[in-house]
Length: 252
Image (cartoon, rainbow, N blue to C red; front, side, top):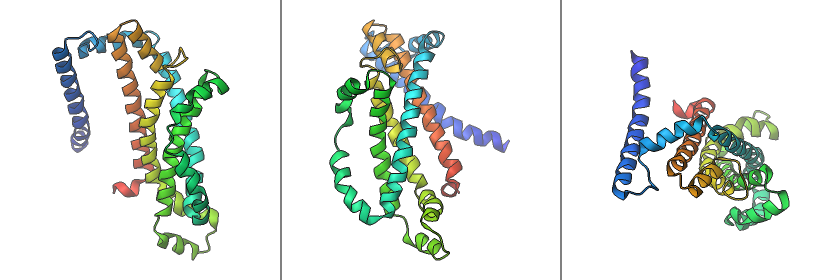
């Protein structure tokens, strides 16, 4: 009985949020009376039809691009961020380069990447990776810099080397911040994914949405929007689950 109540307690807020969004969407559609904003029921019917068509293939391509990009960004940014946070002298030397390049909107390099790397997956993955890389790097570096020095001193007193500090102090101590930066990076990556998939491509959920718009099939367009939102939602839940499993001490 307790398990059922606990499960219901977790499901109820999500169900309430879905109902509120659907009501707001229905009221907006009713108020605008525009074919560009179809009622939720029509969009959901179109989603069901599209899932039996080519929508899953487009979702698969988009999911591949997002996962590869986030993996590459994390694999590069986390070690570098931990290294800079642990070594103030190197951080001081690298800071000007980070401060100069971080504010530059990376999407402006999209035409260059398309010319140099082609219109396939590589150029899109590189652009998304580049954007997520900076978010993860800065967050990881700041978390490592602000780590309680008493932890470092206590582990060093036991004879720990540099690798031991990374493994047993810096990585566990910065892991919550790293996962937070991944959640933030996921939101940005999804936005950039839509942009890159509406430019010089015929694959991906962004193309599916824009193609539906060009054919004025607004129900199908919203089906793509819902599918993209659900993909991001599932990825966000997986990151949230990973945090609860890997950082159990902050949830006790």
